Image (cartoon, rainbow, N blue to C red; front, side, top):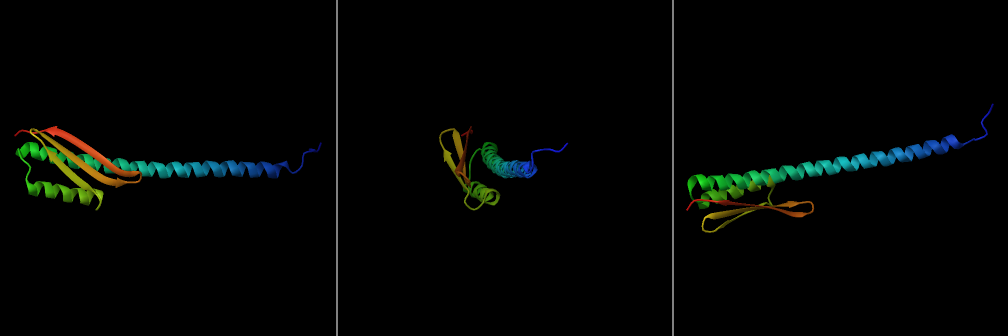
Length: 118
């Protein structure tokens, strides 16, 4: 018995290759997005650690010196890149530490507030 359908095998192979190519492209795209998310999370973690370290230093010393603030800003540049910025706003018993760094979607901002003794 011979099959009456001829030439269908080539069409099936082409369709299978197209589906496989689509799947591989999707996997590659997901890998790239995952790597970007990993990098973004790492930078955010470094920014948070830097902000917490400054806040804890001020709590331990009871004051914020100009040298401490400049040293903290230079650490931010080392960790997050040349475009990273650090801002410190003082009010009565509060300290607001803000870290800004460039990201793919624009600029990322992390703000940390904490109470400090006078």
